[in-house]
Length: 565
Image (cartoon, one colour):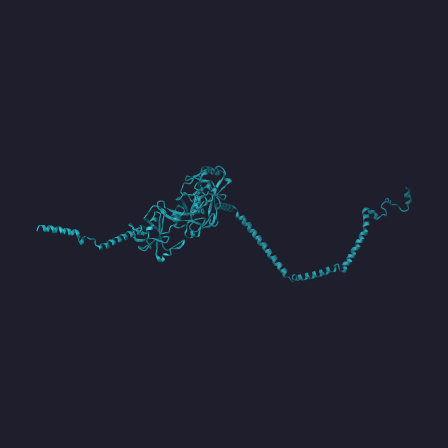
């Protein structure tokens, strides 16, 4: 019995080894889940690979942005979609989570820019009308940097120029009154050459900082001698230099802008480096005034009125501008010099030799100050004159007064030298009128009035005589004989005409008169010898011969005796 179980045990063992049981085989049904798992893994991997990078956008206002529907485009090609819109932790901005396409990953660099495209009405016209039906979308502009970035800020306005645009970017600093807006034009002699990219307020120094972009090839116009000024609207001025109206372009007339140029009295200068800083002036005159940065300051102590004289008024020498009025009045409460007999109004002026074309490096202010001191001794004086009769605007005129030449006593007012002054313009006329009135007051009026009264009486008597003479003439003209006088005169003239016709060459009286004159002429010719004889020897009228001796008077009967004797 013991042998049989052992044999059976071995036989069973051999049987198990020869014929495996069904539980040890791999069932074909497991192939399906394995394949499904592999397909799911592949789909997950493919979906992850095709999703692209995720970025975070920050903007002030998420108006028009909707999660799941707002697209991100570049050149009107979809490169992403907004997935979620939420508020920032401090609730000061909107945070947008967007998914980009895989092929856009290389474009997400630090200088890439995003802005919202939606309907806008601005100075350049109407834009974004295509989004009225489709909704707003985010425009994406790839950058040129090699540094990757995943967080960006979305601008409310489109950029002025793309990152790769050729040109020059510079900075402008101005006061609050000269502020510009993003997108304002930058013009050169009325032609648009750039735009304002940024405008920020700096509360520390209460100024505005602007960043502008000048397009190529116009960036070569910006030199170190260029001046920038605001060109907003129309500049209308009516001052001592006349009436002026100026505006740069229609766009700047509507919305403002900035313009620049090089003053005529300065060389063109050298080109500037990017990110250079310039001052933005309020107007062109202020910009040109900023060129003259080296000057002499003097104080005018004006005894006359300063009405019509304002800051920026010119200081001229015989029509040539030498400086500018800096302040009216200036330091009004300062102590007046002891040499002054009455209170004067202080006016601060600047003498700017650079206006004469002198280079800044060659200008010696001490030499010019000594030169003006010598001019004061020669009679150089300042006076206020009227530059515009319509507005009453005045300017400071410098000229030599030869009667005031001599040693000049220097004065100072509030640590500034005093420029000697004299009355001019209407002040001189006023003084002359005052002197004339004083002379008129000194005249004896009563004798003049008495003589005038006598003259009036004589004139009245003469008028009475003239009136009587007029009455007499009227009476004479009304006399019937005077009225008949023209008819009588006509009759007389008629008879005179008849008489003249009677002595005409064709009349008998004229012929008889001519014959008589001819006979008289012959008679006179016959008497001419006798007249010559009598003229030569008047005794020929009594004696026969003019050659014999004078006869002797004798008594009758004594002719022979006398002869013998």
